[in-house]
Amino acid sequence: MRLDDALPHLRERLLYLLSPKSQPARNTQIAAAEARAETRFRNLLEAAPDGILEVDQQGNITLLNQAAEKMFGYSRDELLGLKVEKLVPDSVRPQHHRHRDNYTSHPQVRPMGSGLQLKAQRKDGSLFPVEISLSPNMVDGEFHVIALIRDISERKQAEDHLRAVREQYTTELAAKNQELERRNREIEQANRLKSEFMASMSHELRTPLHTIIGFSELLTEEIEGPLNEKQKRFLGHILRDSSHLLELINEVLDLSKIESGRLALQFTSFNFSECVQEVLTGIQQRAIAKEIRIEQRAMYDGPLYADRLRVKESLYNLLSNAVKFTPDHGTVWIESSAHGGSLVITVGDTGVGIPSEEHANIFEKFYQVGNTTAGVREGTGLGLPITKQLVEMHGGHISVKSQPQQGSEFALTLPLQGPSTPPTVDEPQ
Ligand code: ADP
Picture (tube, rainbow, N blue to C red):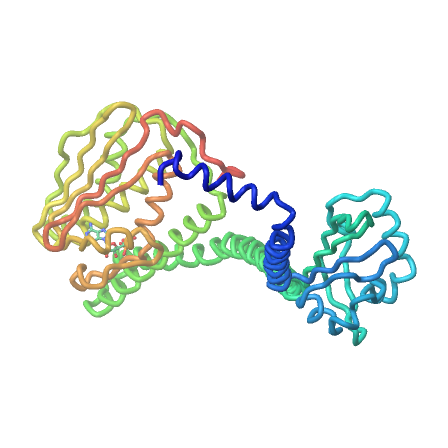
């Protein structure tokens, strides 16, 4: 329909609506609309999960929803007209009307009793925790208050449970911490005792051993008279085993000193290649016995600032291992060179080699690779751990390259001028 055509029609309709004749019909339409709106609002009120109450200025309940009935255990009829104080715990009931008066004089939307743990009382007298929000509502010029009440029993329970669990956890943790501290003190004490024991035993063990070794050597020299073959063999056993025992005692002592921080390095400047010659002299006998060739390849011939004795000990450990784990007629070599501020020393052999998966283990205390040494098990399993610790105390490091049946190469890197930060030591050796 065009606008020109519609206008007369609309005019007629408007005149009808304005005429006194149409008044009752309009009223009916308005009433129906109001009833629909009322139903919608009532449904909304009833669907709310929180309890909703409206209270007049005298404290009488004037409106409520289903959730409020359920929450307090009263029927709708019982609640309508009931004093709101009946829903307040007995203990705070006498003061409640003052809070209401106070709210009437300062009406605003706000939570009730903020910061307090509010409780409400059911018809059967039982209490439950609640959160309440208040808002003023003017009805036909009269002051009312709408209270939105939320039952927070479940949330409280969950919070209480969480708190209890947390408290229990904290208590357990504190107890465990105490236990750990106690154990730590015990371990410290045990370590101290162990070090003291080691120190005192070192003398007691080594003195008789030196006597055994010394007199056995004297006997083998046959100055006091000739020995038969059997006696020589027996003496050989005594000498070999007591030397092994001495080596073991010395290594255990060294390690315990290092671990308890009681080993102090004595730094001096010395000629490195001279130090290598001394170590090789000590190895010579064993190499000759196995017809192993020892090669000195390129050798750094300058000064090194380090603990001479401990550098010798480290080289001795590597070279004696190389000889020990190389079959007869093999080759062992040593070479060294300076790079930047470091000295790199390599000790290699054509021996039994070490599988890759054992490379880290061999630096562990008392670890010996069972199957590569072809029956050679005369060591203590302490040489490499000690060497590693000594080298690291110097600010250097040790690494290994090896494969079974393809020999081994151990590389030591030492700073030529000593460690950049001096090693921490408690007392001199
Ligand atoms: P050990 O007193 O047994 O020589 P180490 O700590 O010096 O103790 O060495 C640990 C283990 O590492 C040795 O038992 C051996 O299995 C292996 N190992 C060390 N050096 C070599 C090498 N040059 N060739 C083959 N295996 C070696």
